[in-house]
Image (tube, rainbow, N blue to C red; front, side, top):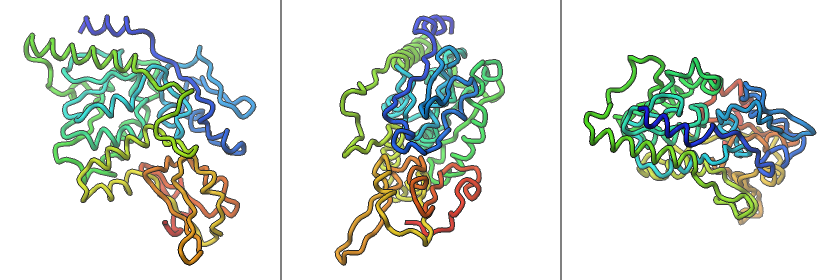
Length: 336
């Protein structure tokens, strides 16, 4: 599509990452050694200076991988609102997720700065709203300077299907396309469908490029009592709760982090006070005894609670961990 290629260029250069310093977990706990964004950036555009994350805009490729791995959404791509895009679509059946560098030829496409911008929460949300095959076009990735953003993407898609596959619509499937022979045969068949598809692509492109993000100086959504729930976490919970009530509790348990305790827990308030989303609460029961409660739907798996626990009684395990026992030692503790 030559027309769409020209519109893509007109829409502007790939956005670069920006830091929302107040959200960074290192600000909440100065000794916290989270390096997820640093480890994800193969372009070496991120660095740690005086315990603060800094961005070298000259090096940043705009792949958005750092925004995908940060549990607190402390990094964003200005002008690109992925959660809004995913929230406003009711079904991703027969959709193709592309980057603007690739040829746009399908009637239902979602252009992204890079496939690497898709977080685990985004992939789980897409799968649950699939209702049919969903395609991720990786054909041009090997020649792209942002290729580092999609390394391991196929494995992540497979883990998503393994995690929630039994609860998906029977027609739902996530397909990472790495060979031309795997491309779906859903090309527009006539002039009218071509123009309808073009219009859909243009709207999607403009929305993705110029989606207005809320002003950070105003009250943020999903924030109460100083505890902010990241938009991707809120989106996933919303999508899960929209499923049939017979499966939503199981999906919530499978798609969100799990907190485990060892017997050394003293029920002190440190973890509850440190949790940035309010997922952990220490409540006093009628008999004056204390109880620690955990809401997986509010947990981002950031690990601040475990880092702040004096007796190392807490373990957090992510729903898509490659090796949960290796990533989360102590998983044998009691789950609350």
